[in-house]
Length: 350
Image 1 (cartoon, rainbow, N blue to C red):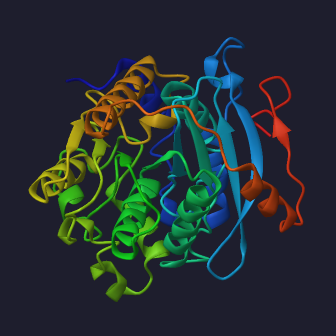
Image 2: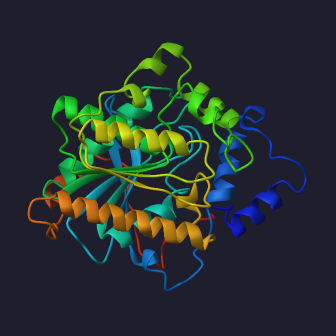
């Protein structure tokens, strides 16, 4: 399929004065500011269901007791599920604000509480710190919402971390994970598969940018062979039902397809949702690219169908977080919390 026409115009606009500056030619702070500028936009419609989601800021203790910022999204419609969401951005650039819209859409569309975790980022905190923070966030979610079916989700680097958390949970027996929702995950740190693909550059994400991201996250080459990183060679048996979404014009497309094959080889119920005409990061541009929004809803429908079909008795029932645990967590956190509604939440441009 041809590249979506709106994305084609967007890429042409970005290349009007030459190719965008590669990440390795920027400072980390410049890379983060550029990512934020491209990802954070004000709501386009006041009647958007995602803007009715209630939001609370929380703090999570990491394994070394460093507080991790998190944001909890509660939709009006509740199907009794909770999602630990790990944002993308190459382990370097994303944060709670860049993925605010994505988490609102996920909460509203899936009818699930979403806990977005702001794990510490490379290069200040390389592997395994982001993964350890992601594990801590998933365990916190499980403690705070003990009666809900717990889903791990993420996009790009966050999807890779979510898969690593699932492997840790399988090994340690906690937390109990009901399903995985992975959007265009990077699972081959050698990048040989991406480099051999037809869309290695020119479509918002290049293999060179991916190489730079891996260099920040994995400065020690030996870590690239670990199962939580080299996921195509990891033992994936015993993982929960998984949906993997890919994008056609993404260097990581083939990696996602191979991941689905590996999951099925390990007898994991897995569905692949391709994204014809789309690029890496499509989950973050639903508000400006209709094809990306349609794909996101297809991904959510496929996930909902897989989740329901693999749960005993079908659809889960509505349930609430454990208030005693939330009160205890609040008492041990020195920072104040803020509760936002659609009308009082800060602009995503702030």
